[in-house]
Image (tube, rainbow, N blue to C red; front, side, top):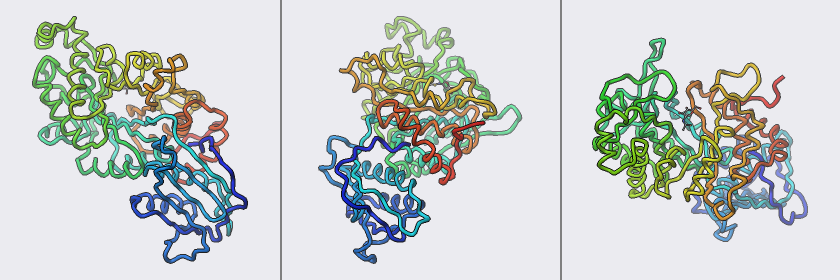
Length: 496
Ligand code: TNX
């Protein structure tokens, strides 16, 4: 994350000096304790000693934090940092904004030399807010399962980059990762697979696990967006419930990658009953307003020869088999809307003319995002060309990756706003996100390596609102130093 192009107003006279690197921590009552906790941890790690206000002399400069309804009220996530000879004041109209103030301060202090007896900071006033409300990062935990500890560390990295949406891809062909009460076979069978070498791979999250992740995310100002894939990418689910498949044939959870013909049979009411049970639980467990229901890569082959699906085509007056996905999507999206959620689907669902409120995640290309915006949908831009972090970072000696290259240089050029989009629908573009599919990634170190430093470029662009290569590039080396101090694994900038 770069320091944003700081809007610096009227600097004070004189510097702020911090003898013994100490400050009094003076946080307004009513601000949740986790903000204080974050300041102490994150700034303490860098060498700033934050002392309790009551046991500290008034002569020690204060680090103040307060909620000010008049602070940039038109920017929900905006914040202000004032550095003056008397101390530092963080303000925002929201707790989330205070969290970003804390992160920016972290970036500012990381550039200081704390080995000196007294550090000095230049006086300045920073007023800052993000251009896009959706600054997302995805993680596929189906292809490889990652424990809660890894997810929390992943969230820490997202927060360091002011990413505010964690898209948790919980289900796919190769593994179902969420325990659902009343559907025990999902964790007994769907959560496990036998690899080609005979070993077992799998795992799942209990409600307790999810709650632990949700609390951690909340402290970091991140909304968790669960994804339950349907009607394709469901082989793991079908392994446990073959009756939901057109062929009713029992097949194991696959251990190979790709797009499978076996999808949910949408001609049976039982399919909807099971999906509603799952969605009811997901909506209750995850407090955020978004639920992603997948919708990508759905072959028509099984539906074409399925009597239930073909009967549905006739009874529902559909134009043909190809209209089944749209019909299915509309029912699911309407169900989620009834529950007060915003439904999100991958851009393939556009073909079925889903309800306008359904948000579209454009992954195949920017043009798909543009089409979705023109059709009146909220859009999240995630085009493969710029946002697929499972692709190699380029050069020799890289770990095995999806056979495509996405160098940092291209992520630096990512513009979430399609250049040809009419101004009056710019608001349809909620923002963007990068995706990390894990077919070829099985360790936390490898995850971090694929994420960093590409996430720095992506998150900076989403915050700034457009590519600003020069600013981001200039700050990357010092940012990488911070990543290294924090112990994250990243790809070095220069490879000789
Ligand atoms: C396409 S992107 C997929 C994923 C794969 C990915 C590999 C999307 C919605 N579907 O199932 O993991 O490509 O890059």
